[in-house]
Amino acid sequence: MTISLSRRTILRTSGAAAIVASSGLIASQAFSQSARKLTFAWNASAFCLSPVVVAQERGYFEKNGLQVDLINYTGSTDQLLESLATAKADAAVGMIHRWLKPLEAGFDVKIVGSSHGGCVRLVGVKEAGITDLQKLRGKTIGISDIASPGKNFFSILLKKNGIDADKDVSWRQYPADLLDIAVNKGEIQAIADGDPTLYLIEKRNKGRYVELASNLSGEYKDKVCCIVGARGELVRKDRPTVAALVRSIVQASDFVAENPNESAKLFAKYSPKVPVEDLQALLGTLTHAHHPVGKNLRDEVEFYARDFKSVGVLKQSTDPAKLANHVAVDVLA
Image 1 (spheres, one colour):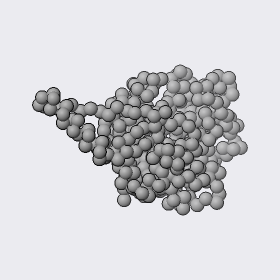
Image 2 (tube, helix red, strand yellow):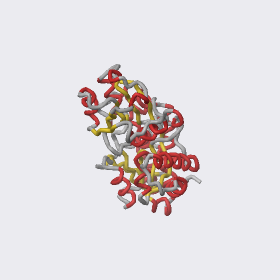
Image 3 (tube, one colour):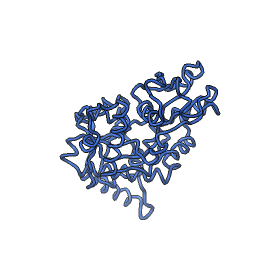
Image 4 (cartoon, rainbow, N blue to C red):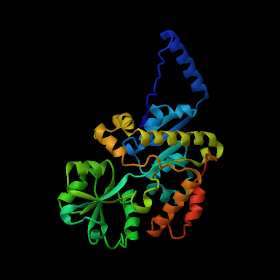
């Protein structure tokens, strides 16, 4: 399903209305002739992707010479990356925790930019006594997807805390909106998922859960979460267009970091389940000021590749440095 976000119309209150309208038409015609068109896939229900909305609504795409059609993509990550590799979309944004395994498999997609850190949390059930990571031994963690960022990331974090994610804990999959029902039934004692799912669960069950960790814990506090990718052919043949997209998302991410309240209002139309005041609070928990590009992004890709290899998400034969060099491209250089 394609969603077209209406472009922000700026009316300058000087001169006659007819002159304003006429000049606006001329500017619109000039833009349509010179702008580079791009299709950009994203998940319109993911509040953390507010920079995409901001880039469209506040004109960052236009300022960088782009005319962007947004595609609301809710399929699997493999399907998303395949749509890029086969030119059904030009670029997309998604979680690095989901992308590295398919990219290892050879999709012709390059990581070119990033948006922020955060999104994923692990909470324990207080009445089950799960108040820190060590108390998870012998317990069951609920997840919404067996290949979810929550499972992949916290498998790594548990290992770094001396807990074998395959032997010391169990993982059980449920639909996201039923995870707290599974807690009520005593089937799980912790939940690993993203916001706003966890936020809404905690809101329904005040005081029941304690946060054990997030993907901003410890050494991850300055690591990226959501990345921007583009189809390989576009990167090779039209790097300026990809660079314009990366600049747009970086600028919009900075706006979100500095203006979470205004950003939440812009995004609210895509999130009917979460009131705008809750979106404002949620955006404040993310690191939209952290959006590495170039060598810094490449180094973070290698960091995650080493992590994922350590828990068997990536093949033992994969060289993290070579993978990072292959999939991460500095389009701004």
